[in-house]
Image (cartoon, rainbow, N blue to C red; front, side):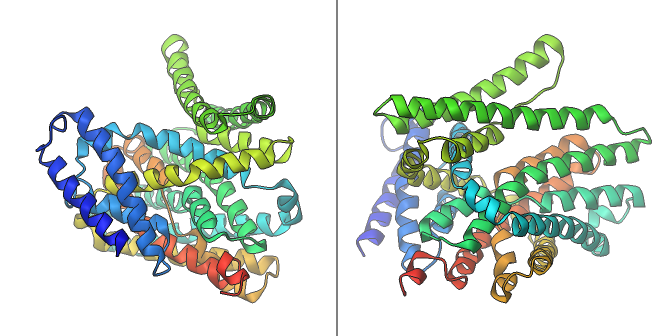
Length: 443
């Protein structure tokens, strides 16, 4: 009851602030500051309420942003959401550090066979399955009926590549919330992080091949070489920074959480600055990926330094605030107008991807003779999509101007649905696997 009353009080204050009845809230800076604090408190409260009925807290964070965001109640304006988007970059790099830190090399080596075959099964089946099923259902979509077969094939392959992307942020948040631990959890996390990296590579390959098919030109090998160089450079730089960060944590006694936040900001801003300067000065398109840098950094600190335990403790300290804000803002940014106009078609894509994910997970588990209970529930952990998926969807608009905007709109609507239902399925799968804290303790 106390939490519910708190939420009602926060909503009342938010209503007053949204109407600019309070001094200082009529300007964008004041409203954005208020929105930040309000979303943090309200999302945390809703998350706690939903946890009482065994729903994931991040579902509460998402629904809070959705409910109070610009497309429903409007207490948080669209301008405020846009001005707070800088937090997304900070949160993503922080989460990437956490993702790298949550990957113990010892467990990866022990489970490398099952992780490798699972990734192979998921990537191949999800990509091919989503592509072929989209082709089979293509007559359902109005914007595909007049396309020639080449364009239809490229469009289907692009959507298939986007379907392979997952959400490490949601996986880590739910694993931490449920205190999940065990072989199933280790495999899920390892596969999730690796698949997001591979999804970016696969998307780039599909786009490059697709553009050459549609234009009738030879595929540019320089594009693939450049992408590979960006990935290798990002991971190498991240490893170097990992050793430097470990040395800093060892020498400096305090302010470690501030150090991690500053590190995340510097990596993001320096990466973007470097890419802008190279393009401006030398007309060279080279982009270091902050998330890959931070995954490598966290992995090195955790596994190849004496500061792994301290690093994980610091990440744990700041994690709750970061996850709460990240998912609340993600919920506020969900465009309900897009979802309202395309929800029936988006549900078709959700079904197509869901079937492909389930089949791919089953194949991967089957290849390594995993226990039956793992085969049945493994696919439930790979439904959620978020940051990387949205980035790929938006890239389609630029790469394929003829039909890209329609595909991007549909993909965003699909990702929005997966973003809401995925965490619920993930938490339930961990519970069924018997690896959540309450199951291990006999609850």
